[in-house]
Length: 101
Image 1 (spheres, one colour):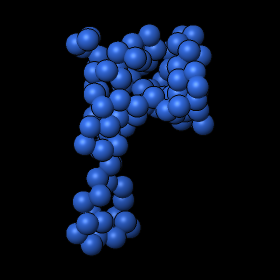
Image 2: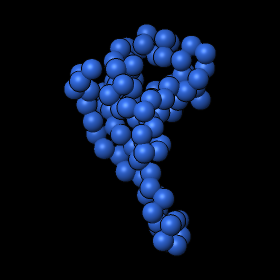
Image 3: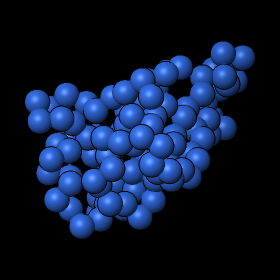
């Protein structure tokens, strides 16, 4: 599901902000609200993406959250021929906004 940043900024708190590391320098953001995952968009319903994590944190600075994480999935297991039966190869690291902008 999608939610616009302008609507999201009106919430008191969101449960979790997830910064997805999609590629070498490409990040996208989603939020968890009442147990449901929403991808954040601009007012024209384009996904919020940035080539710099700090830039994306600045964009999300007016959103209050209980938790923020950086999530990265790896294709390493697939590349070396392991099956996907043994679980997900996703890493989730707690981060905070250090206001580096």
